[in-house]
Length: 265
Image (cartoon, helix red, strand yellow):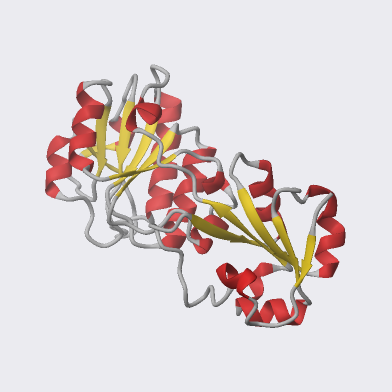
């Protein structure tokens, strides 16, 4: 039995977590995050994450009533009011607020099968790119994604939306000291560190083979990889390209490399 609370004005403090989302990006330090739309809400409810509250229109309530958790606060608001509170149309009649998952340990990400693949991004600035990268990493069978501390938030609403909900279940670790963790991956867990670089002098991906555990490292959209990170890599790899193209979107590059190593490893 779910307990419904009707919302009839904008200032209701019970829905403060949903208010002004376009101007209030999710903060990494926050204990909560918000997802939008029926698809992502359903995928959130199917995950192991704790859902604390849901803001929903009467029409969407009738479609989803049997799926709504009894332990969550369910706030019902007219569609026009919900649009005014949220300020953008992506909500599609429902939003959900959940507890942010704990940061998985490096050991949990690395102590996996002998042929494990990790995706590593020391610094990624674009939330849409990160969402695509999470979706690609999950789809291509990677074990986890390691992110540097200074990048964007994997649980920001745009990132979760672009990931199509993969961010809700795929292991994502934020690393306080990326160089140290890469050294630990190579030393303790015997990962082959493979740096993706836009350098014709690097080994072409078509000639690269990596048997066993590997960590595929991708750089910032504009600046590439820090030289200190590249210096740790066992292999420097580039994707041969045509028509004077010098780089690919990080998610596209990751998809190409993950597919290659899935076939060759």
